[in-house]
Every structure is written in structure tokens, then in C-alpha cells.
Amino acid sequence: MERIHHINPFSKRDSHTKNTVITWYILTTVTWLLSIIVSLYYTFNRPHDGVWFRRRIWGQNDAYYTAFRMNHIIASIYWLVLFVLQGGYIIHLFSGNVEKVNAACSVGSHFIVNNLFHFAFVMLFVRSYFGWAELFIILNFINLSSGYFRHPGYARFIHQPAISGPLAWTFVAIYWNGAIMVPHPESLVARIFGNIFIWSILVYGLFFIIVYKDYTMGLNLSVLSAAIGVSQFFRQVIAFQWIFAFVIMAVLFIATVVVAVPAATGRDIKFARARDGDAERAPLLAE
Image (cartoon, rainbow, N blue to C red; front, side, top):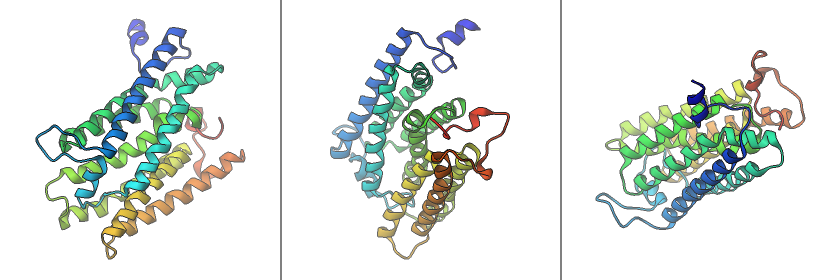
């Protein structure tokens, strides 16, 4: 059992050897660059192989007027900021602070898998293999959710770029890609289901804000809700979806501020207090 624990890259460890740190540094850097390159390339170029429709990332988004169609400017800014923050996370693998190095290594396996799944998703999405793309999104959602619940206690500079930022995107992308994947994605029935399922973003965000005091998830999901809201507004002014999206954005943003301000000033608030018996339930009060 100890041998399995030793070779399992997802197992919890209190310390990491120098060789392990170097391995994580190489793998995180390579997969991170792979994720960036494929994202940037297919933002501006469409694939030249495949049997179905071949479009750029946001070309696919704009080709289907679904209930989860996003504004590509807001979504692109989200990813650019996330990629920059992920670069900062990788730098911490060579920090002189042992605790920071151990924390960065602990979530490294989930971050690496996230990058590989994101690469696979983009390659499939731009070639219109939406069913297979959805599979990789769901697998990545499981991977990142596992990373979140197993390592909820790390500081913002590790938690946000490696776990919560990709997790928030993956959750929304399940609906984004899924709405394109279903038959007749622009039909009235599809939009009614979209009007219902969009509220899961609010429930999901409030869960992390209230239970874990994780205002990074609230902020991430509020930005992505804004991306949906802006796109839906310009598609059809007289409709519910953009109203719902902006309401969700506002509620999550207000809840985020309510939690983030006391955290920044070193104070606590009752409604977001974690369980007394689990110290790891307060991941973001202090770095």
C-alpha cells in the first residue's frame, strides 16, 4: 500500500523530493505551454483536417445561437488573465519557501491533467466533435473537483490559477459545449432548458462562497455569467436568458465582495464560517 501511495501522483504528501519538484516543474511548464499554444492558435486559425465543420474556437461559439453562447471578448480576457496567473503558479515551484513548493507540487498532478484535457477539448471542439469534447470536459471537471476537495486549503496564488479558475470555466463549458452538442440547439425547447440550467451557475458559485468562503470561485463564475449575459443580450433583447445571466452575475459578485472584504481585512463573517472541526474548510482567508 505504501508503494502505491508513493507512486500515485494524486496522493497527498507532506513533502516532496528535489527530483519530484523538478519533474513537476517540467511537466507543468510543458503542458501549460501546450494549453496556451493550442488555445491561441485556434483562436485565430481554423483546423485544416477533419470531416465536420472546421472553425476557430469563437467561430464555433458564434455559429450556434445557443442559450450559453458567450461574448468572446470577455471570455478571452478571462483566459488571458488565467494563463498569466498560471505562469505565476509555476514559478512558485522554485520558491525558496518550502511550504509554497509543497503546496504547488500537491496540486501539480491535477493541473497537468487539466492542461492535457483542455488541449484535447480544444482539438475536438474546433473540429466539431462536440460529443467527444463534452466527454473530456466532464473528465476534467471530475479531475479539478477532486483537486479542489482534496486540497482546499492553499493560498490564492496557487488555488486560483491551478484549481478554481479552470474549475469555474469547466463547469460553465459543460453547458456551453453541451448546448451546441444537443440536436436543434437553437430551438425553443433548448432555450427553455437553458433558462433553467443557467441557475445552476448561481447555486454552484454560492456553494463555494458559503461553505468554503472561496470568493475566487464567485468572481470567476460572475465573469463567465457576464460573458453569457452580454452575448445573449445582443442576440435577443426581449428574452429571459440575458436577464438571468446578469442577475446571477450580480448576486455572485455581491456575495464575492461580502466574503472577500472581511478576508482582506482579517475579519470573519458568520454566514461563511467553516466547520470548526475542519481547518481546511477556510482556504482563502490568509495566504
